[in-house]
Length: 321
Ligand code: G3H
Ligand code: 13P
Ligand code: ZN
Image 1 (cartoon, protein in one colour):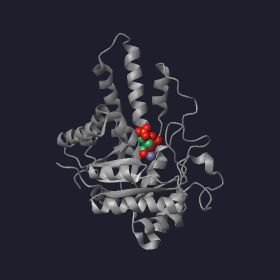
Image 2: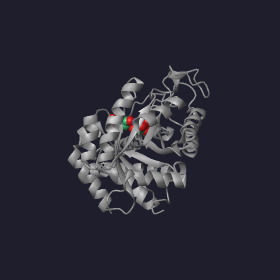
Image 3: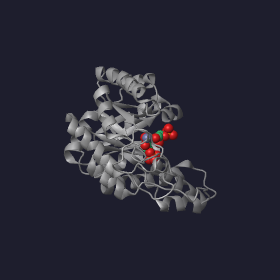
Image 4: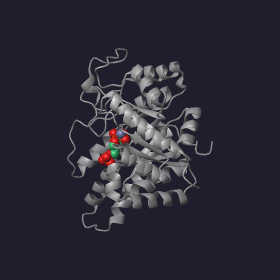
């Protein structure tokens, strides 16, 4: 089966009211773990490649690995550029056959972000790909205090509902990543762990009221940073801080119901892989066959992905809708 287009996956996810897991891929074991879990649970999936993944693994290796994943499975798979930072990188990925690209101009002033996004949209739409833009900055909840639900000041870093409408209209972008207190990595919150879900509802409603329909929103930084993974990492020689914090899975579930159609997860995969490798090497200090610790690492990532798609994103069972 060839790649499935991102547009088709989004349309079905919106219809079925589930979220697509968008998992980051950097190497073979991560890819196999994601694909095996999604195949067994019959879940459509988005594979994300970052600029860093391309330079770590090489674009050709990644392309061939994904070809192998498509050949070895029967589920719908889309391939997406994560956090593209230039038009040129987005163009290369569209030319390489990615079904969607993200252009992340969120650090730019509104008009520059919109202009860059529109440039990518114009190219991608002429070449059978779709585009994710980003508005607002993913710096975490602690940086936007006082902006909680309802008070949509335009000076903050959270996504402003009316600006989201203007951005989508101006650019023609196909999906939008929002900033609602989310951030990347394993240290997401300084205080209480939560997303501004009222703001998410307001963004979704504003897009609908503007005639943009059931517009797909994207949640970045959606790792929950499970305590047991951090504990295992530290138990077996790691040194992660005591202030790790992720998004509660209950919040992700609400975000899914409100309208986050694509949910990005990377950190949790990294934690699962690292916890398993550390444990295996601690249990067997004489071990030097990489298969003996990468195999268990792959298995632990696979169980994590199975949990996400089954219990949080609810994409399991929807592969052949
Ligand atoms: O949001 C970023 C992703 O986790 C990718 O991270 O740039 O280290 O590959 P990376
Ligand atoms: P986490 O690493 O926090 O899961 O975020 C992933 C992400 O947003 C990729 O774009
Ligand atoms: Zn991200």
